Amino acid sequence: MDGTPQEARVCVLHERLSACARGRPNDELLARMLASRACDLGGLPPDLGLDPDGFRRMLDRNFAGADWPAPAGVGPAVDPNRQPERDDLRRLLLAHRARIDASERWVAEIVAAGCMGGNHLWQDLGLRSRGDLNDLMATNFPELAARNDRNMKWKKFLYKQLCEREGIHACRAPSCQVCIDYAQCFGPEE
Ligand code: SF4
Image (tube, rainbow, N blue to C red; front, side, top):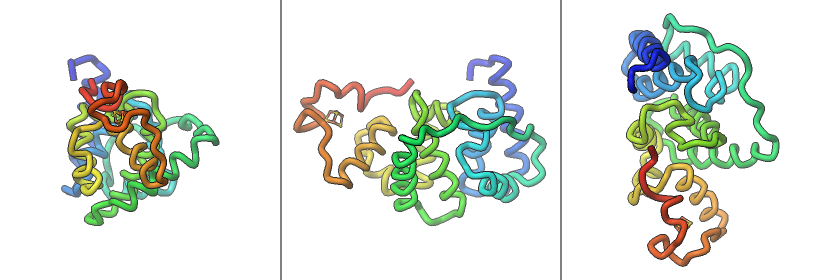
């Protein structure tokens, strides 16, 4: 954060949400995503991509009593052509969830929604950095996080899992090491 008024507002909202959290595994990350979205940062819809009931239950469970602005408006409509893709991503994440905390289900929905955005996944989720996203993946989907041991960009990595599961080899090169698209799949996400 470089101290713009918008980012200062994110910090204030994040603190308010965190003050009502009870130390559950995803409190910090969910508070960050909620605060960013409330300040129009990131690419998630106002309800973070959850259905209305799930969104309300998440707030009631993790941030009961928090003083923060209720999300306004409706999110961008999901392109119907991309709904199957979003469903596949959600199922992939759910199949690999840590099974430690119920909030993993909401996080899977949110990450799948974030994959519909046009920037790096950590940016679309309203997180501070790729490091936050690494933490999110390790906490919620540890098997997938361990599988991404070469730091592939997260969206690329998740879509590659879907392709491999279907037996699709979409890459033009026999291996990443000799691929001309290497920089699109690996490297810094700033
Ligand atoms: S670097 Fe090339 S071979 Fe490796 S996943 Fe990306 S496109 Fe496929």
